[in-house]
Length: 355
Image 1 (cartoon, rainbow, N blue to C red):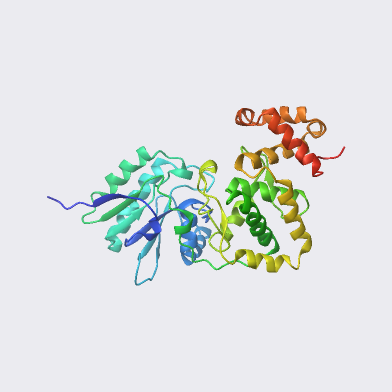
Image 2: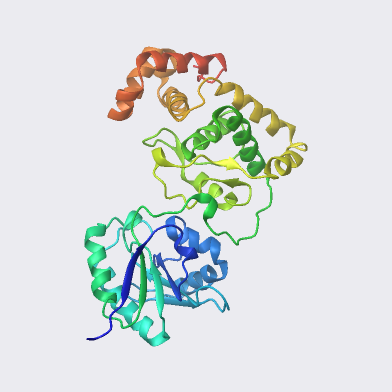
């Protein structure tokens, strides 16, 4: 009987798998900004540099593996970047998974790879159904003699604290110091802050005059700035922990907390920037009594509608109408009474737009 691969389902941190090769899912435009790709970027910054250079040269293509040798005596010998989509905003196509698996089996044979760990190719941000993808992985790799395969199905993302990060700690800028400090103060009451709450804290910090250059826009959960996600990616594992790879669903995300030494580093910066320090304190007063995911979304949503609609800034009944028109979810969640309370809280702090 012909020898076949040994395939097992695995959970936990794929990057810590005891395997010859680790598979990373990538696009072809040089971006590793979220999910498993971001984990790989932080764990192997030199690999990311090689991948980005190859993308710029047009060498990373759908259906073809980009292989990077780690050169390490211990741990994986290869990182295999498996293109599952063209642009990072695009969805994945099952035909590209099929083509990629064909090339992957060739790479495994040519490189003498004996064990390999794979994520759920094209699922998650790629949008493919795992029930479609898994059988294709099994069919492609089962026939490789003696190969040890560990498959990490959707939902096996490790906790933020266990994610590997070998990147250099970024400088503590004024903006990062404000983020660390406002989060630390908020966490004294709320025991950490989810990404949703961090978004709203920084929203109000910018509203009262801190020049953060965050690009807030109307979103399902209230005002949201995608470029704040990039800031959180940068400081994760250095000053904050909990954001991880940014792939968690909003309502299931871990609380983000400050790491030891971060508050002290932030304080050293803010000593020379008293205006920023004062704004951080003002934000704590603004959100007092609203320290929860529900409360922060409510307060920021009400503020947003009053800035976008003149009638909502003048009358809380109008604010109710605009909040309830935002999404059916907000209409179900936010009662008239709660919107009224948020409206007058904003008014007390002088945050309702003047005529």
